[in-house]
Image (cartoon, rainbow, N blue to C red; front, side, top):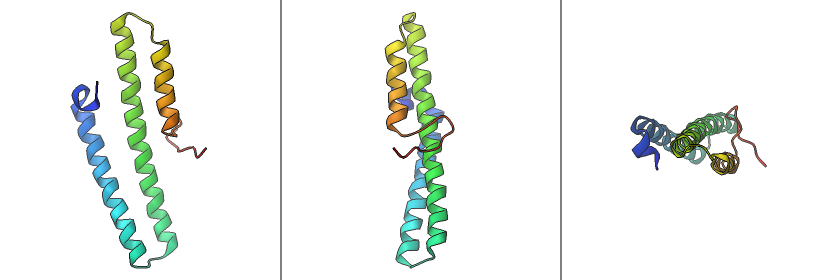
Length: 103
């Protein structure tokens, strides 16, 4: 299952957010090319990082919801799927507060 099929509204929300992040990245590139102040560039990078974290947490929540739904549909046996979901969140470097962990 994919997000687009299961939750079209979430899909549209994530795509809108990703397009905004793409615009932020282009803006930061422009700032670098123009030689703008490093502090302002860092502020924009922080904003972009926070936006990426929000997209990641929304996608992770969708993934976990899909796994729970699938486990209920199957009548239990969600243990392996739960570990897989946890692994996906860990690989994305996200923790429950939405902060990136740089390990």
